[in-house]
Length: 429
Image (cartoon, rainbow, N blue to C red; front, side, top):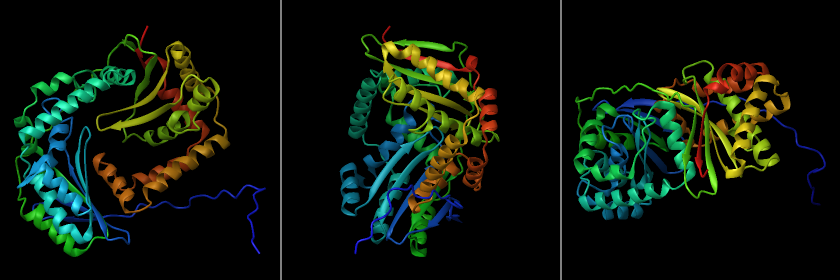
């Protein structure tokens, strides 16, 4: 006899319980590079994240950090780009590169049975790239064309104008690359950046998966003993944030059928006690599909297909940013509705049912960070990259569960003053 579940009543909603981030074991390679070992999982796979604590903030010329990072796999040691790609494919490995303002990353996913071979490739990429001329020219041209195309999009124009007004056009957070910047970029620029920063003084490593002592010995051999020690640490660069006094900006794009819209405001840094409660406010406002901005501006008014808000915390500055696109004729009423929703946060206490939904969504997203070895590695990397303490995620859980409607109203009233907002619209008049 088949027994079917009762679909006439709603299942009981249960709390997540305690969310605990597994702690990494920290060891040191022979040359002083710290390694964070997250030994999790039953599969014979592993992931190595090489973090270089230098990025776009530290480059002396536009595009250098990105190009130096992406060019690592185009030729290193005695391997050409084709050989690197072919060998990684043969061993079932996957390489990923990325650059942020303060960090550059090289990530290798590998089967443990081929760990020796794939680690050998990774160590060449980090220590011995030779930035071949043909690949350098090809990638520069391709990226120049991609940037040129990107600058035809109203959302890109709005984002660039927004960041340059928020931080100043000479600050790394506000400086924007131009296609012509590729013309002045040279291989020597990449070699210089690599010499200065891709050395043990600036490197941290996170290794995740089913990790053995033999794998750690190999890691020390390749990126410890053979790498050696460097002492040429570059001096830190500090830039003054110079926000524009002009709060409403229009960037014309002739013939555009839609407007790209960015609305934002500087807020407190990650170290401030109000930063984590502000994450709850941001989620309520526009941080998930059921947010107030989506329900009002997309579902009710139909001004856009999607609108979202984000809380961006950089090392030297943080801001709340609302992003969307809309048909030109809806631009002004859309902007007004955004501010109407912000005013509601100041004047009307959020109902417990809505706040409970936001809490459950945010706790669910946090739970996904702890679901398996590689998401846990991502959480650790985020902590290292942002100089956060190990209890950051535990504190976040506590704040999500304890924030009140009064807290939301206080935060909105204190930090979301309309006169301090930047409103950027890119499109056709």
